[in-house]
Length: 299
Length: 334
Ligand SMILES: Nc1ncnc2c1ncn2[C@@H]1O[C@H](COP(=O)(O)OP(=O)(O)OP(=O)(O)O)[C@@H](O)[C@H]1O
Ligand SMILES: [Mg+2]
Image (cartoon, rainbow over all chains, first blue to last red; front, side, top):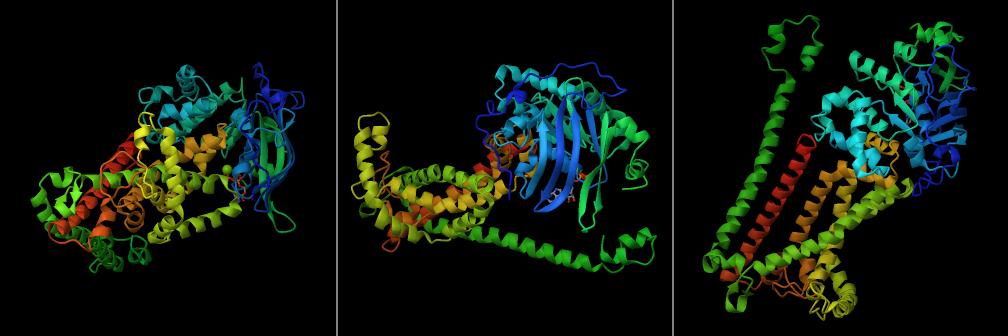
């Protein structure tokens, strides 16, 4: 049973307060090291004591972390430790999962993401998501990318350009420019994943959540997506889940390491073990479990 | 791979032997049996269908011989004067089915969406059970209920709508000459709609339920409201299933006999007055077959053949439409 009710989404523009309606922040010059303290940057998400349960069973608990604006935050950890689960709290996707329950507080630009008057559709428009498995609609390539702009009321005339721009950003345009009218299901897995990225970009969100965006991609496409992430960083905040340690080390600014352990009561519960600058975490992890995982002795 | 090759002690199988053993592995025989049985079952269906067509066609020959083309294209059905033109009945059948689908399809899709996407999880099961139960109610029960409870109030509605729209072009004609008793095309259409709604709902619900969560999440994650998600993900996914459901509903509507016979007024005619009495092929067969003999009987059997052909044609059209749409979307035909 859903304990978090779906908010009324019929009046999507007005309900979310000032922060959710302000224009996108100015891009700033990306500096790699040293990273400013998260507290000094704009904080996009702040999670405090977050716990997620599925049908009463805790999957992950006590997650505290801050996601800073225009950075790439990576979630790493062994399979089943709850990375996807945490990611899905950020765009309230658990609302539609039967039995899922989110506790603790999550703020988005200082505003309670799970507050009573929050417009969930607006939240998800601002916080885009690319899923672990490519999930294009059974529609044409063009219509897949156009879906977001259309439901968000973009004018007919604008959509063609938006679609092309999004496909270009996702490094897919050249491959599909002659077959925009063809079904998206005819694309390869990697192309489908880039299409899904384009589809998310076309909505022009503030944050993009990516759940293992490269797991279906070859090294070349992976490199393109990583380049894309660096480009996107200028304007967007990215949170990525990855199983690829090199990718996390290469592409992200901060890394969160999760793992699942059996606790005293015999429950298998995911926890955030360490959250730090990526360089710090990979060179001098403060927790032995992190060290074990990144050096491949664990998980 | 068969169990035999998997269970062999030798880990490096000799390629000659593993593929063409002296004795066929046990799995192969059962495969063969299965193939033969299913093939036989499939052929049996075709044989039965062919026998039905041949038998009805030979019985209906007398009708076609007597009436020629006017058997189908004349709307004069008058057994007393030996006129057996089926057009009015064909028209009645299509009109009643059309009215029925007009009411039943939106209702069914609405109920199916409500049950799959909107209703609280607790009440979903009970609703589904109730609908399935309704699907099992024999049609004569609906017919009797309509006769007892429905036609009187409907006749009042017909009268007032008719007088309200008299003089209005198109609508005036459509609603003119309401039947005094309440027996009408419209009444039959409404009752058939009620009868086919459960089955159309059940099939539609089943296709909506199979819409993958990933599709729905894709739409919602782009900022779709629930309704936008349904339009963007659930409908495209369920489209071909809904068309199939409509076709099955149509098949039922076309073939519906007893309930329609009770409430349509049994007057075969070609008229635009949907509040007036009429008749359909299935219902006239039920009403007249007992008394019929000679050409009359042959004509009634011929109507059965026309019904059969009609359903086959509709089925083919539906398949073609679906196949074309699926090809356009790159979905392999099932
Ligand atoms: N819908 C669900 N219902 C019940 N349990 C779930 C559900 N989704 C996830 N879980 C459980 O929650 C735990 C965390 O799952 P999650 O998908 O977040 O892991 P993950 O870190 O993303 O793993 P992976 O790297 O394999 O994708 C797992 O034990 C899983 O079984
Ligand atoms: Mg995952």
